[in-house]
Image (tube, rainbow, N blue to C red; front, side, top):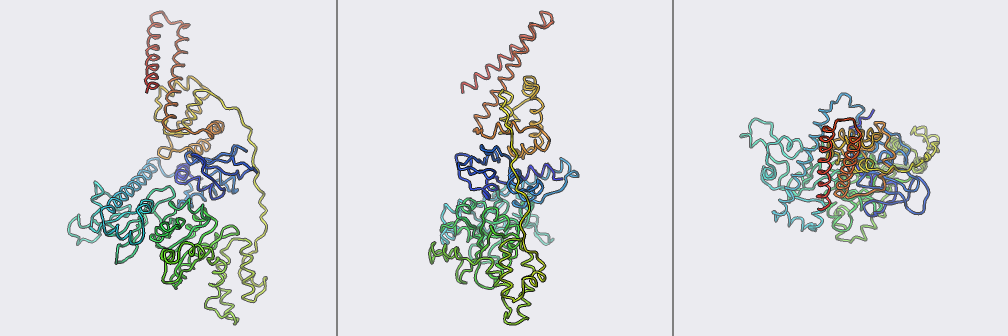
Length: 601
């Protein structure tokens, strides 16, 4: 069983526009995104995705839900498969059960994550400030052709050369969070002269490149030495926020450009990404100083159907390309492709564009070597294919690579080519490789379950619950007296109100529309009608807050009026009636004056 706390964290970290946009062509339409519904045939777009609510809705067929629901309905995933798919896309590991983790432990973990995220944000602001004050760093970026606009887009900064420069950016340089976030190093040896000498900045005299997660939060840094020195690039160590093999530099900034271009270009260095963005290729990303991993490839394939890896044409570049090939093989399909671009040894992508122009580089990308061709080159490399021994070694080399591929028409074509170059029959090849040829999937297409819409219930209490669903943080505006009045005003809706407020209270910092809806559904709360009533509603926060407070006051006034009516016909003695009536009238008058003040603003 997947813990609810993890599901809420996951929904807060992913972006539903990315999840849906990788499978449906979306266009910006006001505050939302619009496209043709993937669940029914239509000519006029009626499928909307809200980045604010993190929810999708089709006005044609009525399908709606969070990113989890979308994967379940669009891709046929089970709930667990959908959660695992989304978790892998943001580098999260799905826990199976948190029954042994207390609420206090979860709260501590969340507080720790928030603290580290804030530390990284403060450090980034400090590095950006230092860049403005360092003429050497500015001159270096200008020499590389980086404009102020591009530096701002990527949040570039500068780490000064002093041993403890970050002391100027933090009130408490001794804070443990600076060490845990990988910004400060503490020496373990006992020869350090005093406590101050034992702590020093990890990054010194380097151009700083913030590394962001898919939510745009800074989780790590890469530092490029300003002139000469080793290492040329220095990354943050792995931390609770950052795992190198799961992240890609520049992906957050390149998301829209990747969709527009129809492919992503994977390069080797941060500076390549920034420089390419400057020269008109904003769809570039970079690995983080390690070999490309399957997790990174999978993350990229959620953004585009085509990945182009760019490497140097030397031995080191071919070796890096081979590792990228191995990471990609389990993920390529008939609709997801990978290609390899090998540049001349004297060029990186930036220098090639500057010497030959953007058009020439675009043509190189277009003619990039298909994965199948590179795979065949690697299989035969170093083997004399005119001899049986050479062909046998090629077969042996191909075995793990072919076995890694999922059944597809592409794999059929690769195996056919392998038959030709190794001069073996199809049956012998299949027996040797022990891989089955793909068959036709027997999985029936999931059919849309018809929904029978019910007319919306109109009322002040419903208005309050709609606004709480859209802005869960508004729950803090309601006191016990307000909640009691709403329950008294509409006792049949009191249970739903309490369920909504309880779910909001449990979610705490993980509040958003999609997470709240998923939590209510998981708790068995019948909230579908309320969800349908909010899908096509968009409010700015301040007007929505005023509407909520106004509705609550109206409810309280009506409850007071009802109490006053009941009091008139009650069996209380005259003095008690009068005392009680005056008390109710004072409360009513205070509310009316409060409303008048608000309306007069």
